[in-house]
Length: 346
Image (cartoon, rainbow, N blue to C red; front, side, top):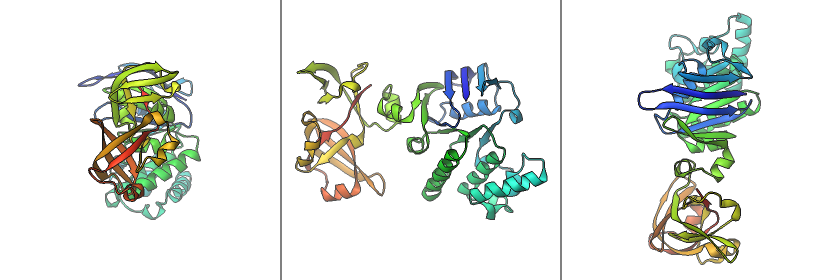
């Protein structure tokens, strides 16, 4: 278990300040935040590259705050940190002194990551995806307690991006290593993590199980980061035993979605369901069915389409699969019915 207690590091424009963060053994923890929010600095502190101004870092009950880099059992993994003058083999085996052990471990790990054919090459001849795999192999041969990943998928093309996600999942599931991964990409976090935290200007806005943070974001900043696109202002009232949000639109809520009411309702785009003639709405609350006009339609990916809607002067963003968009012949000006299947107060 890795525990951070009262961490403070003064930076140029803000202070990285984390009161308490506990990451369990074999967690895949993702720290999400904008560029310049303190994500990389956090990793550098854990790795020992930067000194804390205040606070403690505890690993498996031991205070490692002042321990040197090579004694921490925490390894930073980044393709940019490869030694340019060494071969892939020598980069991977750099931290192992015994030749026989080095040979065995390098061969095993390189086979597992599918890079054994690269062992005699130099880093400059490798693609970004290959460099990331070499960096990951170098981390794995050291058998660390914790691996730190600094935006490992950032420079990769689509195919390498998906392949490395799959490899990271496999390595995590087949080992007892704790992964700490920083990124600005929520989709990465969703694909890999069981725990996430959202950081803003050096402070943790929310930390928890990935599904819990997605379902119950603490505030608008967190909600936007985990994929919510629709935010409505209003007030909550009780009517005929129902909990109703009365604002830009009038929406009936599940009782378990009503906690502290700050007058802001958040809706994910995929929770706005489009139906052509309203027939499909029988599966949803009749209170949350609205007439809408399509303002715009454009692809988000090969499989999904963004649909921008007008509902009584309120603009909403939906997301549907491409085949449904074609089937419904969605286009500007088309009249449709929508069902809001879930909304949450933040």
